Length: 266
Image 1: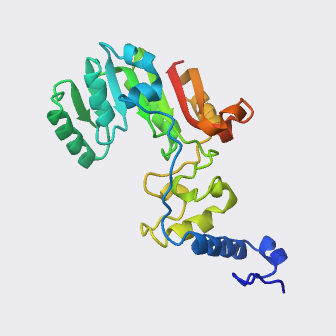
Image 2: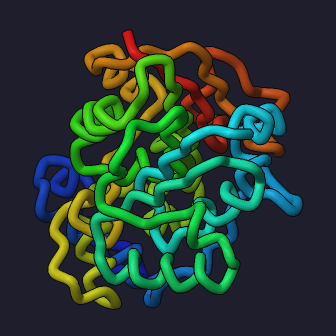
Image 3: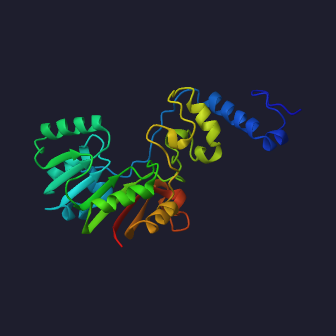
């Protein structure tokens, strides 16, 4: 029997033929080198005073002037409040978690934009622009989300989406990317087992962790949109700064930091 002097590993041919053995081996590697939750640093491709402006481009700030905007999945409402300050006529922060709605309403009151910026589970009128920020890699059923967005959109309106990192990004596995592309090297079972040592929410799959991870790739996103009531007018794959020289249509899945796109009704 071949053994590793540190991990006392069983024969490699048996490991490759036995799923549980491979999972156990990967778990032991993760446990040895990352015994606690890792401290991850991420590629930040936007900076400046307006997060929304850097996510969608300065042209977006001109487009919202005098418009009704719905921020879908607004969380605690910071971007929605920013939109109200930047010139939208009306902003609806859309969120299904009531505790977040309460926080968002208080923040809007403090920012003195409560009359312009409302936080609801569903907007009472159709929006000229429906916005989604950093969410499409987390939705459990992104196809149904696009249908919901379409139902909130005015006939000539636009859906603006920004999400990332996509699944094949070096840290597309978020917490599970303890080193670049670790979420592609280790199995889901091994990573979930490792996570359960310091997270105790009972998750058994990537999709069940807090916030969810749906393994969204750029190509998969395009297919989901194609099957929806919406169509893509523009899609930009924003490159990872350090990998920009390698960024192309062929390499975009592995070299894209974030996706920015605009959708309209078919």
